[in-house]
Length: 549
Image (cartoon, rainbow, N blue to C red; front, side, top):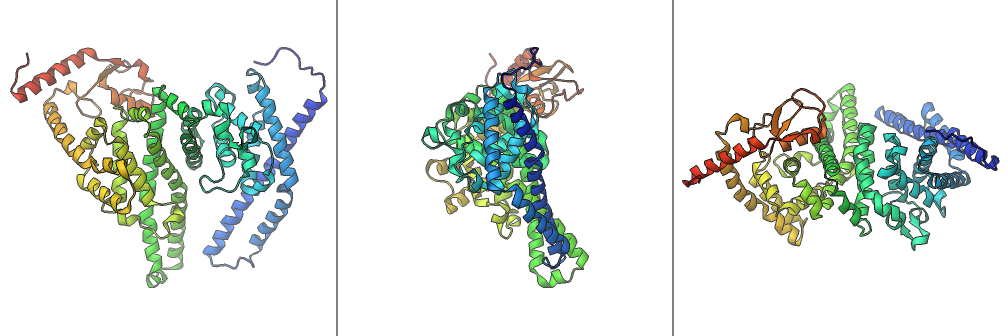
């Protein structure tokens, strides 16, 4: 709603200067920085094309012209004094936005925040020394405020919200984290809090940032396939940093109080990991095959120029995809690991709608790393692809260890078609040999095969009870005996609660007629549940030779 009173400030000159300056930057340094970034990308691509043709870089006129443009552009767009003044102005803009009334905040031009994020990220990557001794605390506080659930309505653009997360990673995450470029400590740390990082010292960040980032992790799904991988890798790194601090642990615990939101977040993690693992594990063997082929000079020379160019082009395409996917894959596994060290969060992953998917995911990755085809993943220079199989196996086995004492997890392992005792036993031996886990964690993981074998007997006994069950007791989608039957009012169909919960996490429609459906519309099928309970009681008594009385 627009204000009804006319805008009539005592001094109109200062506000005019403020808005004119913001607009000038919007049409000046912001597009110039974008042009410079695109120019560097074009130079890199041209360099690759020339290298493919074995051309002389110094003799190529187009390449030299691009280099001339780069050096000329750097003289203006990377001028230290101009960059410093620009950042000071954006810190002023942030202070103005922080002081605005909640009703007025959404009325401000969105490009104020968008330009601020673009310039902050650009300077951090291209000229971090220009940030030395600058106070950018207002920008941090504004980012935290706009990401918080209370003010999410003020910035509805998913791409801009993703940029806010990137600013936290690029600028305010201490530079010794994640092998990043050196950002001056004067930027990422609060001088009024004894030099502590803003991420740890700021009260509003302690209160809202952890749940805000978990929400943002799901929102960046809408930013594009490749873009979301970069955003989520950044968010994961910040979340890991926050998790390791005592200041943020209460906020993480509060997350478990909103079961529905957390399940959506956890489901997003598992969807992402499944997709990344499938992509990486498909392309790493292909990369290895080409490396072996290129290493055989005689075989490689026997191919035509066109064949070599086709193979090389696809090979480099696969390399780029793996390099993009693996950082997020590694960080997602790490996030699953550190989140599940908390008992309350671990209990949410043990819910019926989550646990089977988690088990199948972990066993699938374990099979790829340790199984018979693990040798196909042994590419040359794995670090250049961010492929660190030992670290991945360590993180994976640590997750198994954290769930080893949970009966629900052990039961789902026994039910999973991915589980093989030999695979887990081999993984235990590999962990001991490489000293990947230590102490109690190693012992818990080592106990897994025996625990699952014991659970498998109970699972088999239960499956025998369900074998001749009436069709009305079976889930129509999974064809399994239902544990908690519920009625879908949109189609008058009864399914297991865990089945429909999992379906609605990815698709908000009734699977039987595509009508809109939410979990709060689902109704317990109590009468059927009572008959199922009676049926199992009678079957079990029959098997044990006892009485149903």
